[in-house]
Length: 315
Image (cartoon, rainbow, N blue to C red; front, side, top):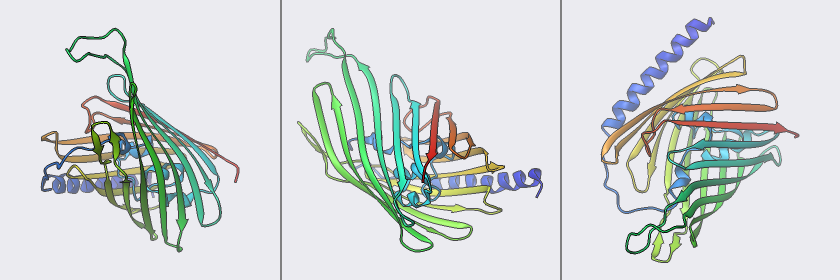
């Protein structure tokens, strides 16, 4: 098939999916927030490949990145993988993520991950509102262990356990949580689900606050061949409305990737919010590099740049 014809079909399929996402998102019934959550950094999407596809990644997740998005995707690992992801958020915030993933057997894989959100230096004030001479530091981090199990030829499941910590100067809070995911794969379709951040509450001096529980359901589709994949998914957080995402990826010569995505967030900060994203990647036998550009995101109107590196080695 000529590349021009294939790209035309790709754009048609993705355009139709984007229109569906926009239409569905706009008729989603808004729900009022019931309260607040802690450790919201747990729901900041990890990895440039996923970001380039608008975060519609639950049904596509594979390799080391699956430890965050859907641990059932860890079963695709054949060699050992190490992944590093970085992006500078707004102001002084930056998010770092690292994962080591390994195949334990033909049906079982393992991953250990670490997430760190650095807030930079913050100005301190006394009870009278007067600025103090010393700045204070704040950070959030989480460590997790994940397992993926190939239950049948087409069905896999995955689980993660995590420890979460937040600190502000000399104050800190912590909690334990778990994630669970599943994936059912056919020749051209994949359907997958994920539930994350279910566990104990964050314990502060002033009381306890629940974690940002989230549930996602996604469908991935290969309409032409394995070089092109598109996905659509719905995400529901405990405190918000249903978020709708879709994205696509086209891989040329099994090395070069282009990606784009669209996400819609009803009633985000009392105003409907949507975002396009774009990405590209280069794949080698032992390494992958991915980049994503998001003109704006649901947490900020500033543009974001994400970078990811994956190294593969051994068996």
